[in-house]
Length: 459
Image 1 (tube, one colour):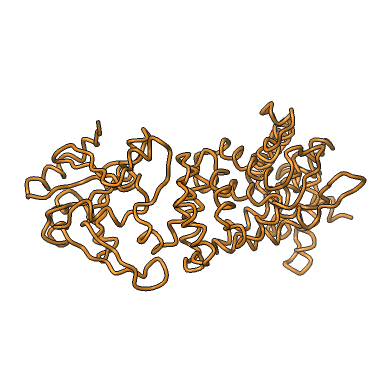
Image 2 (tube, rainbow, N blue to C red):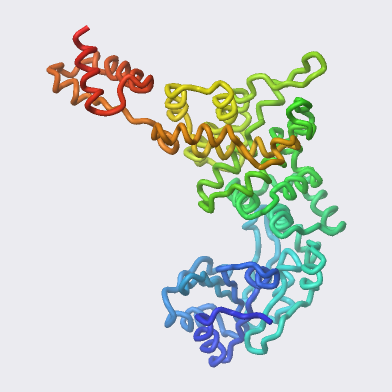
């Protein structure tokens, strides 16, 4: 039994009264059948005269946003729901890339024909609101029940290379297994280099879904490996041939550890997508430096200084997907210091070191990344689920007010002017010395800072 939001009823009743037939399609219906919550509802409207007629019928219900006339899509917000209304359409490939399609819109098209353009059978199910019947011409319900990912049509599937990445993130999100024919088809597409047709923002969009929505993102990365995609991502490929220290990492190679760590990170998500994306990417990239620094010493494999060595490969990897400088910088700062929580805990680091760490990265986020790294192992300590080093560092950073933000200078140029010192090049030197003293704990508030300044100037 498919239950739709009550808020939708006035709109669908209006469409039906006008002789049109709304059909719920795509991800919303799939998620409902999987008993998962969804707020994005796609509706194809049949027996409608044209796009303009559909738009006029929707306008009484709110602000209608045209997001793609060539694809016949109208967006309408209804409470907490995002509704996409569209005419049925057929697509045919005319050029390379995800936009190289001829699109044929027709309100008179039948559902079987319209659903043929869908990527996977589980996305090709419809719910006819008028008859309250499920429309499933390609066996999507059966594939959902068997956790199988199968394409609707091999000839149309190959026309859009983005579908390879959709398969990856959907397999991980819904715990699906690609059927053999789909697997071979995608392997062939990857080998032909079709992913190079896609702009980085499209690639990144699917990677985000994998990292932010999958309970076990490792399923998607394992599928990437099977499809041959790692051949085009050297930073990930290198992890497969790099061994861990068997004493501290009994799980084997760095690739295996990385997959375990990103699954651990998925269980630590904060429910803030922006923050979680930074954390997930940092864990994915955290050991990129190991292939360059791993050495065998007396029969043991050790990674020496891999934090710093990981910055460049992590930067190169991230730039393949995004130009967001702030995101890249935040990820790199976490990669560069991901071992610090454990090191500081073992050394019982003092306040000055913790304050300086807060200048370089977000300690609260760093603790989460380090915890995922720690839990991504097969050691007994990791299996306990506890990370005392992180608790220790976060407690100390919080007491120093540097757990989420870097310490700010207590002394400013105006304080020097107040002491009768005219603006000069010496300002910078004095303020730098004062900030170093602050980080060392020589003063902790404005009153103490001014007293320190007087003493410093009297020297």
